[in-house]
Amino acid sequence: MEKIRLKVQIACVALLNLGLFQWQTVCFPVLNCHSCPTAIFACPVGIIGQFIGLGLIPLSVVGIVAIAGLTVGRFLCGWVCPFGFLQDLLYKVPYIKFDIPRWTRFIKYGVFAGLVVAVPFFLTPGFPAYFCRLCPVATIESAVPWAVINGTTDIFSLTLRLVILFAVVVAAMGHRRFFCKVICPLGAVLAPLNRFALIFPERNDKCTDCGACNKVCPMETKQGESKLGVYDGAPEECISCLECRDKCPTDSIKIWG
Image 1 (cartoon, one colour):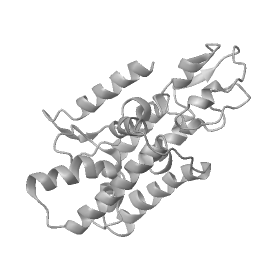
Image 2 (image 1 turned 90 degrees about the vertical axis):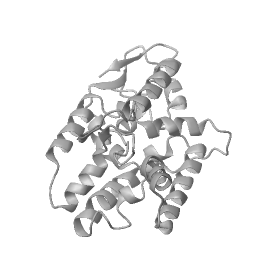
Image 3 (image 1 turned 45 degrees about the vertical axis):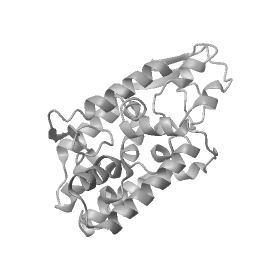
Image 4 (image 1 turned 180 degrees about the vertical axis):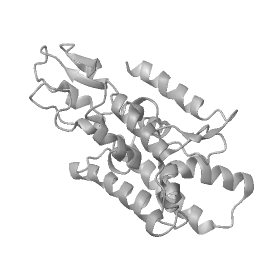
């Protein structure tokens, strides 16, 4: 399954950034900056922030994200998101590995409420603290490419973005899927819906509660005892990577919820 997922992730990175045509009036529910010169779709986080700055609610974007969350949930994070794929690669880099407190997963909800919603609503999307102006994905896919293509006079802003990017890269090398767990505002939106998603790993009666799934989980979810799901302790964090399914000694994990 790991090899299959790797191929799917590579294909998704390529397909989302072909640059041959652009449908940036349509959002796709992964963090892929629509200001990137080669991006096809719009990033839902960027669209939400821009609309809120105008005093509007982008109902079409909300609908797309809601449908995606209720059908595939955070499967998108585990299999489709380009920045999730980059984090998987970064964690393979030899570096000091470290743990983070479990409460840090709640920070992403504050990031969404504060930097994606409150800042553009009470200030403007042009305010320096607006999420898209700090987002490491936007730095890689937009700020740096456009600075190379057109040059830039805003050295301070670019430098700040690069510092944030560097910090996130280092964190991702030391802790698996750090950005997904702690910062990603789209993950904050999809996480509550993940509890109801159609695609979600579940355990059947063959489960012996050995805990093998916990040991390989990149999102450090906790296995519960009710056998209602693989990650009863924190189902909102599961990205359906299915590493648990590969390592299960009793083949007790099914994919469809």
